[in-house]
Length: 243
Ligand code: SF4
Image (tube, rainbow, N blue to C red; front, side):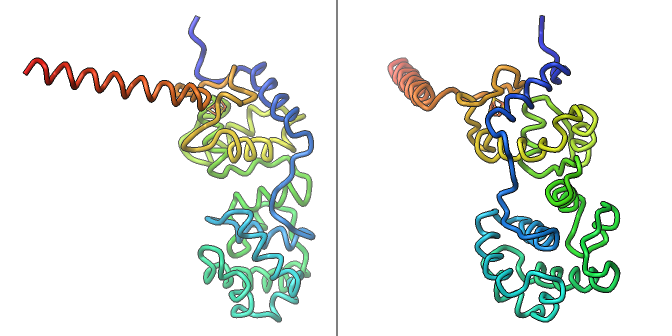
């Protein structure tokens, strides 16, 4: 019997159990000290790697780790510390604006409500979800490029947009797995289910994954490539011989 394109409830349970077994204590790879520095780090991470952001924030947070200190540092000062990451001009502007808003409207504290969080400059739904999950332990799932890919390839939560995938993930992820789901899926996408070359041969969920173009191990890949090359050569020689 053909398998349905979406994972069954039992398979979803197995998927999360398998990913959790691999990484029992998943965490964000962004370095932060408290909710404020996490908001800043996540806001800076758009179109930048966590490693690159950590390098910049280590210097930045050493001089400014509160909204007040950030305001005192000023836009130029922030920019100096984050010039190594993409979109730094705009991000420096947002960091200052969000620090000001936190002081003026929230007593310098990071709000714990998603709608209020997304009112902060540079904080979209994805950033807000990461902050709520990581800093405040809420069972939110922020859909980034890795989670979007893994959700669609596996059949866990297919969807055409990040918002659509988030809605499906929210509906199909059992409560027991919701808190860690964001981390498990993101790390799986970053290190195993890689965009160009998914490492299906060493993937813990390959048996249930619905992706049609799973890659074999590198040795088999090399052999298949060599066989295809040899076959193409033979074909070309046969064509030539025919005249
Ligand atoms: S089997 Fe391949 S495509 Fe499926 S989740 Fe694993 S790495 Fe990704």
